[in-house]
Length: 190
Image (cartoon, rainbow, N blue to C red; front, side):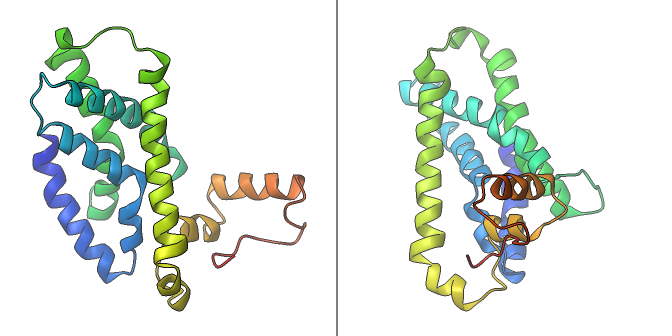
């Protein structure tokens, strides 16, 4: 069900994001988690690799990806394909993994998770994404991004979205820690 609806929405998103110079949003963590979810379902259900990938998928989908809906102010607006796709991208991996875990094949999963399964492997997955993302946007494609300020990335968006709570709180924290002056604001190029 998830893959059937996800593929057309993501193909449409790729086309629309390229038209609006937002293609770097496709490098975000949510797409990595969705890709992991699709990939792990291609593996045999009894394989150890699939079980490990499912644990990473479950923790990532029900943790940072689920709560990113709040950070990004996702809203379900039925007449907007973009907003429906955003909600779907962040919400459905959590619903899919939760249903898979507790209803579809519950007997195949151990009820206990060690610290490495609960935090370690998902953290390694997150760090792999973060490293790749920073290399892509701050090194490999930096000249292209510097040459075209209209190209949008998550960091550029968050630094210019002054009404978002995460922007305001980070700015307050930076000023309190004296990283930024009292009149300074975030600017994408810096």
